[in-house]
Image (cartoon, rainbow over all chains, first blue to last red; front, side):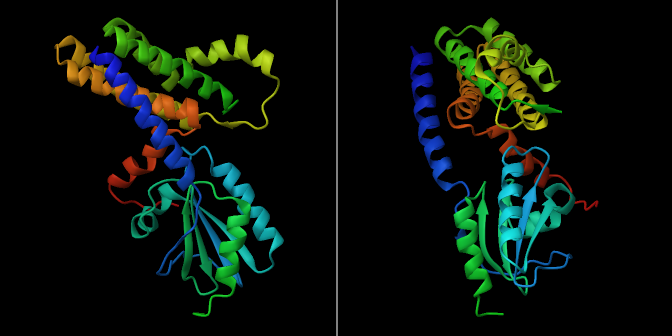
Length: 135
Length: 137
């Protein structure tokens, strides 16, 4: 009997968590601060992607970001292996891969997203970075 | 190594059924069996994956894309930990521990099967973050 209850509660919690996780994944949130990549930035903006070997959606994310970087002039896509830059991972509270940061031309963080972002959302976030008045 | 992403997901669906049965029947033997399945999976020979390749995939056609085999393998390793804790619970009669650990593994398998969300993979960076900081590039 207890087993049935535990099973029902687990499946209910899983269903709820699943929908929440799906809804949150890849949405861009506003973010302050600057990131010191130690790499050249794009002329107008930079898409920084934190990846790891243990990451299912990293490859699809790479494709989306590379596409956008190729489409918009002056935008660079930088992919960082999270494990080799744990300093950046800790400094910027990267909890999972992929995490994507959109930087303006001076390296200020404009937006961030955890999980695989949609292309339209990347373009919208990029528009903010390119127009960022703080540069 | 690259795998058909539907393989691990199929495995997660079977794992969900097996762990649900463990909860309902309270069968430590079935959990032990699943622990062995996790162990094979962690070393790159998932038994359910074998079944998928032999009997399911031929009916599905080729996958749209392949994925790295390491994330699901790592997740199977995380699964072993939960299964062992559950088995300890069963063998010492600590039933809340047994059911709790089984439920945790079930949750991970269910999220993978139903939502394509790999909880074990998500934990990887969190675990890595706790380890001493090193930069090697």
